[in-house]
Image (cartoon, rainbow, N blue to C red; front, side, top):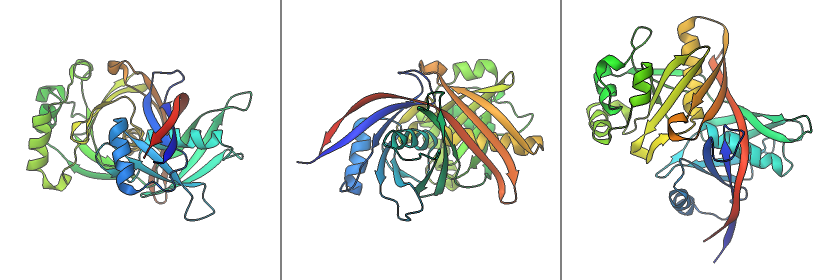
Length: 296
């Protein structure tokens, strides 16, 4: 029997038991693919990460990300939290890391306090914004347990968008609808069956304007995440998509998520136009919670 060290971190928060939980295996050498998936299912968190030596020595590490049912090409809070864990071991002394992921290289900027302690990180999405298909407001409303009139379509209809991670459906809703929304598993399954282009995947990122910022909720029940308290790989396409709609050259946007779950999270995003397309970043704080060993 082998033992493998792990730590858990709360991400996109400055206090324990807020933000989004993450399990990190800082040295995953010798852990097989099936074992990684089994460990992710056992932790039953939205994601678990496994750190391996980089394939290119110019990079800091290779990071594999698993949700409860599959490996992911990129995800936001796992990248931020894993970067924080790696910084505790001494990597990133110059304030930067480069993480190899399936979707590409994730550039990391470490955040430090006045005493020099790493408190969090910001990561750049590995790909430019890609805007995909539009979905009927009626179908999306049913998935969120809402009425079609709860979906705000003045600026855009529900739209798929991604920048390296799984595509998210970006949905503007009313204030009352954001509070009342709940995922309806049957409607998710019917919508996926009616739209083969979704490839069997469907995640909703509901949002509403809140002053200069945004309040958001994310539902992905088909992957076992009934609701997610902080979704970096949805925050970056939302920031990029809103910049796309505005016509501006760059923007900053703070997104509050997880309030309805009792795990308030703050995701600080930026987006800018570049020659390769709209690029976005997301950052936030990290707090350690648990450490231990898994037996394999």
